[in-house]
Amino acid sequence: MRFLFFLCFISIQFHSTSQIQINETTKTNPKRFLIANTAIGAVSFGSLIGLQQLWYSKESQESFHFFDDSKNWMQMDKFGHTMSSYELTKTMSNVYEWSGLSTQKSRLLSASVALGYMSAIEIMDGFSSDWGFSVSDMGANLIGSGLFLFQEKYFSKQIFQPNFSFHPTRFSEIRPEILGENPLESILKDYNGQTYWICFSPGNLGVTSWPKWLMLSFGHSIDGRLKGDSGDYMGYHSSREFLFSLDVDLTELNVRSKFLTSLFEIINCIKIPFPTLIYNKGDFNVLPVYF
Image (cartoon, rainbow, N blue to C red; front, side, top):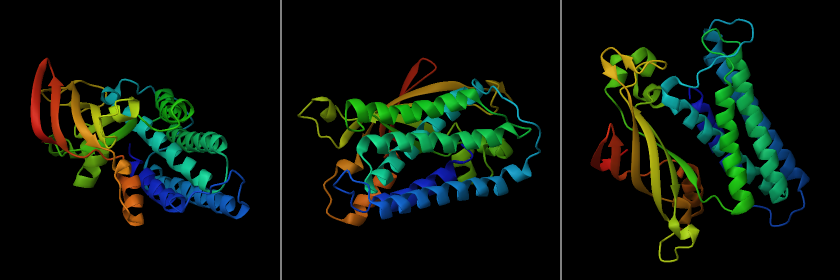
């Protein structure tokens, strides 16, 4: 998730393009198609160059190799890969549909480009001495893009939506070099403060009395993990947390402002704080507000 900042930047740039009214025909608009490809290419290559300069250039390099991190951080980073790939695929699908491509072509092309981008990052990892090409990361990327494609094919709508939330923890103060030396770094590095959610509204599954904007949310997080490949470190014992809460689908709210419509589309992947039921180590706990 060290590239989360770049993925957020990419999504915002793509949203700014796709929020222009989507072409109502299925005939490709050459000018828009050129704009879409230019924007996607520029932002993708630009962010990869930025990653190379800001991150990989500071790491020691060696020949290409693989790295099995499937058990690290209790798979929290895999949830991050899944969500990142999902969001990139969804956003680029909107961009290509705006350009006039058919819905089916937009879906397939966006998934291909998103997976290509994520693969490029994994290849860069493959030459880093401290990392390596992770097959499990690529599997998580495939799940993310596949989740978008599956729902478009069978529901013609994104009913099940991955969301993200974060709260500061005391663990970043214990190992700041690993879990973040400042609030922004902690958002990216401290998996103990991250929660990944899958959210859906029963109103989209045939429960007509349920408002479509109100979603049920099931989350996964961890607690007490200070080292990626060790559950016991410095006297702390890590554990999984399973959560249940509510959320709001901002895109289902009836707003007239184009600015708010665009803003809600961008930030809809961030879970809104609600009362939350948490299961951890055999015990249930209720928090009045959970971030």
